[in-house]
Length: 474
Image (cartoon, helix red, strand yellow):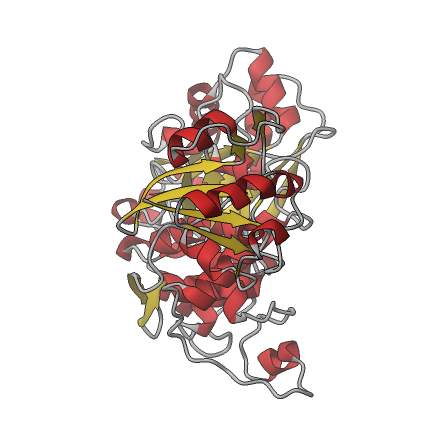
């Protein structure tokens, strides 16, 4: 039997057990490591120096003092803090620390202080980053270098140092060298490490990584056609809608200003996706990205659905996810179109008002040409809720209100050449194809102002629905 003890001077419990350690040194092979001062404990003649914390990291020490019993070099049992009965059992010694209380909790190990686990993993572990390192001169500003080399979306980026990347990788259990797909348009091989680099640059916290990864995996699904979205002349870019418990866990905003600035998770998750497309995939504006105007959401567009009402069926569940699952839904979205309906007081009035706004998506005379997201504000939803309407009733009413006679929509009608084929003059025409209108709850209270996010017209065929969802793997 061999005993191993990890201590630090800056711990009152460690100081209390110093006489016990002195006794053990004389009764059994005992090795002591000190995290902060190798002259401590003086009663044992000091300890081995673990100020690098390598030994503590390799043995996953979380609390000091930690007493470990080894047999042939293999750990058999460990005790954290001071517990007389447990220490006597592990050491086989009786009468330990008679002057001490029976139990006294220890202190946090230096190896688990904020940021330290990642630093130690990078220094002593198997975390070996393989991405090409970029040397920046001592007098150079890393952010200016990023601008000059075209790595920025126009806003400052966080320099992705080895330590920051390693800390970001701690947000997922997936291996850094795991390949998750080919990023368009260049079809560059994308690893978890590459995602972590983009997440650092975007300003993410490590706990956002599972959502970032889910968004990227959704984008890479063939039916989403990310390459096509980049090459279009239209306005659209990826919109990330997040559902499930993960939204609360990482602090995504589904309330006031949910589609705007001010929330780190909303802002940085969508930005990480866009930076990866730009820097790894080569999706550069005015090059492969052919958008004529674009929209501000191409910096970042990510928000959470408000799921606080237990009677509301969340978007992901309505699209087939299991209840309680955390998912991302990816939509090819244009900018935000406001729909102000202050005077509507009944569900029918609200539905007709919202439908009028939705009719403008893409063009007032376009039908079954693109999709849309309706972000239902709390005030409009409250009118529905008070009258017993849930998702099925709301969607049915909107669908009915969006029907129009073909004679008003055919090319040339109302003196406008845009429109549907003249052969449909006698039809009653739906605005969207089935499944093409997503209703999501979000926003703050105070006014009847919902939002419409129009979609990329390439989604016009009913058999080519490109709205995709991916489960968040924690």
